[in-house]
Image (cartoon, rainbow over all chains, first blue to last red; front, side, top):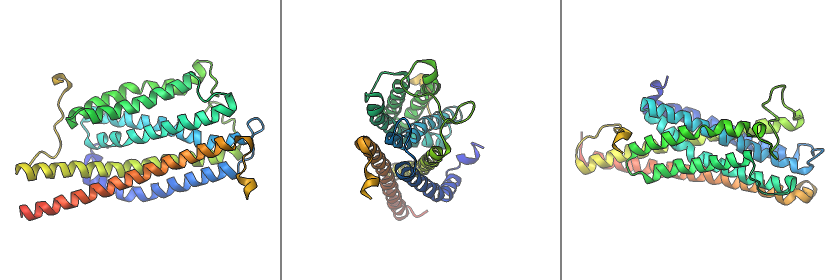
Length: 255
Length: 56
């Protein structure tokens, strides 16, 4: 299956077909999630109006972990099978994941202040999310700093794969350590503890965030492929020789 | 209408968290779409240049 989509032309066709519905689904889902979160959802019996912050915080936090898992799997595929498109996917996901992790941290702080009395505490959930933010930045830094694109891709892939250890830590941090952060209340054994009148906008919003992420990854991958193609054409124009269509990937041993 | 926008004592936190989310998501979309347009144009220019220099 991976090799089927390794063909850039086939990918471009798929992206052209898939991008518009993802964009519509993303924007619609977010608009409904935000609108309902602000104006439709009933006031919580404990949190009052502050519960409305759940609809910007939780989807961003879910997506930031999902984006990391996506980036780590894409990195694995690119590392093991030297799959160029998987590398482009991981590279596209990194800044998006970083932005959504930033949003999760920021909206979490804004929710924490009125509910816990503090913008920030060095609690396991918050700290592991901050670590993920730095992992994203580290991944992006490797891709920017290492001049050789092929080597940058391999080093960044290793960074992403090693950092994946943080994902179960984030998920289970609220169970493993005593935390101010509440434990899982949607995806838990025994079903959600949130009333359906408050749950549906959360799920619609999360679906919207995920679809928007998918759309932006596709668009960014197309940009990346165009840039790589342009770089090849430039080399050809400069040197007058035909370069290999894919940059050769060197092993780490010559680092 | 104004009643609906008034979130009581949590208003500042609610509106700033929604505002930040809209700003970040909107900013991401604008940035990515701009880059897409730029890359497309650069590639088109190069392809035209290729055609004019080496008619294969």
